[in-house]
Amino acid sequence: MHNKTMTQLAHGLRSGEFSSVELTQAFLDRIKQHQELNAYITVNEDLALQEACAADIRLANGNPELLTGIPIAQKDIFCTEGVKTTCGSRMLDNFIAPYNATVVEKFNQAGAVMLGKLNMDEFAMGSSNETSHYGAVKNPWDTNTVPGGSSGGSAAAVAARLAIGATGTDTGGSIRQPAALCGITGLKPTYGRVSRYGMIAYASSLDQGGPMTRGAEDAAIMLQTMAGFDEKDSTSVDLPVPDYRAGLNNSLAGLKIGLPKEFFGEGLNSDVAVTLETAVNEYRKLGAEIREISMPNLNLAIPAYYVVAPAECSANLSRFDGVRYGYRCENPVDLTDLYTRSRGEGFGKEVKRRILMGTYALSAGYYDAYYIKAQKIRRLISEDFKNALAQVDVIMGPVTPTTAFGIGEKIGNPIEMYLSDIYTIAINLAGVPAMSIPAGFAQGKPVGLQIIGNYFAEDRLLNIAHQYQQVADWHLHIPKGFE
Amino acid sequence: MSLTTDEVKKIAHLARLGIDEQDVESYARDLSGMLDLMARMSELNTEGVDPMAHPMDQVQRLRADVVTEQDNREKFQAIAPQVEAGLYLVPKVIE
Image 1 (spheres, each protein chain N blue to C red):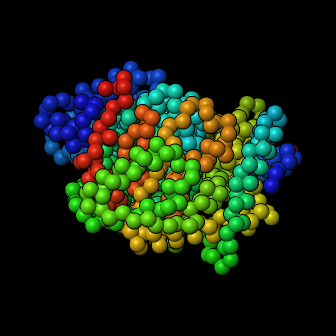
Image 2: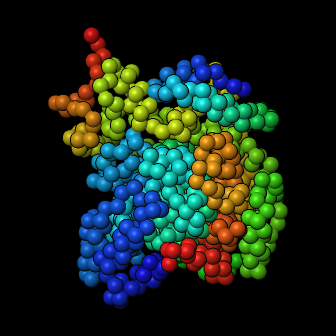
Image 3: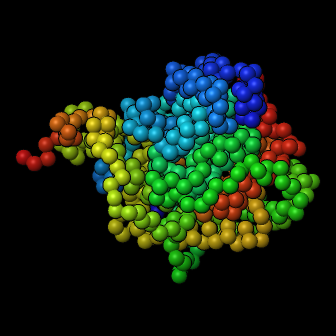
């Protein structure tokens, strides 16, 4: 059962081949069996089975939706009423949200079953899942390597078949990079497409939630449920949501693909480059026209991001003060001591580093030199995307410079870790949608191909991903030991 | 550009963020590394470029001035570290 697509499972549930309770139990058993991956922070067996039971009744009584009875899991950044939401942090180790995130609410309404909450880098700050208070997640393809981050638990769980699909969030690559390193499909939608209500904020002008699944068709199904205007999120965009599955089988004949020369230069591992070249060639066979383009300001995306994101993070995380919820230090002597120690003891090192950086960048005397300068560069980078997407339909490139690196390899050197986000970060600055799809293997480890589209062109991206997955079966490969 | 350990302590104070004395030096080193990375931004002339705060260039949406939220005080205070009589408790601020 655990290797079927969502459509196949929906069919099985309707034909009586298996019930949602049986399906859910099968996944709960697999989760137990593979605890060594550390993909989940919380597994709520009773709740999952209750939801499955309700789904079986709904399936029997008519009026089910496609996702009714299908077991998925939530990144532990989405607030779930009554179930612990930690955001991977000691700060929220005792936090039970008083309400559901809109995304969670939408999956509940669709009748999906929530298996549990997935491990992640603390407050989504990290590219390896090693900053989690709950320990590193292991990559099912090679358990000595990282699954990527920050949605590392989501990627590992989907790759290891510990959930059919999972949610992720992406501020600088946190859906696409782990999807690439774990050999699954991940979609970061256009900024504003998916509600951020109840999704714990890291950098509010960059954060966006999206689906992580094995194939593009499942991603389309999940996005269908997640997307849409939400009056509770003031940055949610009020545009109609297209039928994401309707265009999956459209032909790619005449599709114009741009390859930015800045994406294929120095720094890209040569085996990864060869794998990507083969994937791009597959698109040529599907009728696409490939041309080289240039996006001259991409090289400044990392410095601009590491001003903007920490600045927003330092403001957002000021809410964790030890007063209203979350961790509080013992025996504070005064109010300053309460704030300082609660935050000092509640946050891990990477989160502190970014709060310090952001506080510095926003402080008097440095604001123009760092924050305003970074915002100007952000404008130029976003214009690079606009210009490129006026010449071509989509942009393709690598997701990561290398395949999965070793656990412990980069955690001691934050700057080196930041530089590994080089191909994903600019997309968040511009706000355009992008996907990572499995494109083969290099040195036995998965390689992701990035597909970047115009604002609100998620349907086109899904179509392009799905067509590739009709002629290449990388997304069907199963890591050894997880068959 | 490099930050001194005193500067790091000052920033940590501004952020009301406790950091261990033994870690101050490594933060100074890491933040200095980040600042070096950011220094690359000065390579590009950005004169006359309009700063971009947000990908959508949206304006704030307005709504009718009517009550939409209900009183959730008890629910919200149930997860607070310390409350009494509907109030959040903190150490004494005024002597």
